[in-house]
Image (cartoon, rainbow, N blue to C red; front, side, top):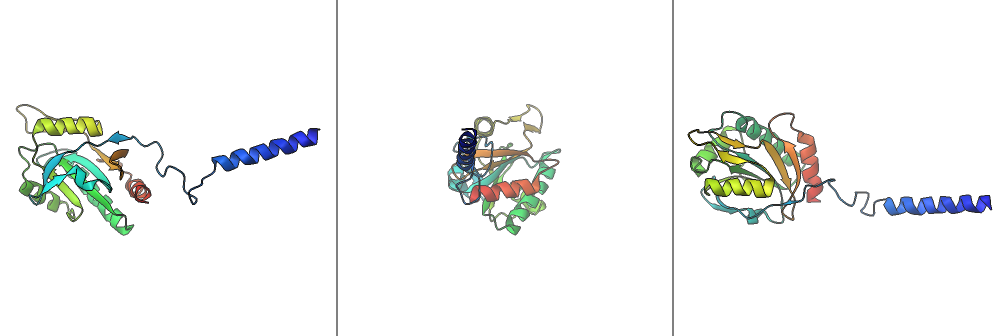
Length: 199
C-alpha cells in the first residue's frame, strides 16, 4: 500500500511539474515578467524634421520612450547619450525598435532645436523621433496618464520638472518596463527586454 501511495505521489508530482513548464519553445509564457501594463494614449506631435508624428504611428511596434528638453542643464544630456548607447546596442543585436523622445518644453523646443540636440549626441533619427508641437498642458497630462511621470514647467524658470526614466513599450501600446535613464543604466537588460518583446 505504501509503495502504491509513493508511486501515486511521484506521478502526481511529475504531472504538476509538466503543467508548470513552458509550452512556448523553451521561452516562458510571458517573455518579460512583471510588466507594468500602463496603456499609452494618443499624442499628436511634430518630429525633428517638421513632419507630423503620432504615437499611433508606432502602434504594432516595440519602442522606447523618454522625456527630455533641449535647454535642460541636468539629466537630459546624459539621458540622451545613454539612449544613443541603447540605440547602438539594439542595432548590434538586430532588434527592430523605435525610440521616441518627448519634449517637455514644447514652447521652446522647435523641430530645429530638437534636430540639433539629437545630432549633438549622435542620435540616428532613422528610427529615433524627437517630438514637440503640443502645448505644455497636453504633454503634462500625457506624461502623467500614460507613463505615470511629471512634465511640469516651473513658472518664471526655464527648467522643467520631469522624470529621468526610459520606458519600454510593447507592440500592444502598453508600457512593459521602466528603467533608470540617467545613471546606472541597465543597457544590456533594456536591449534584451526589447528583443524579447519583439519576438
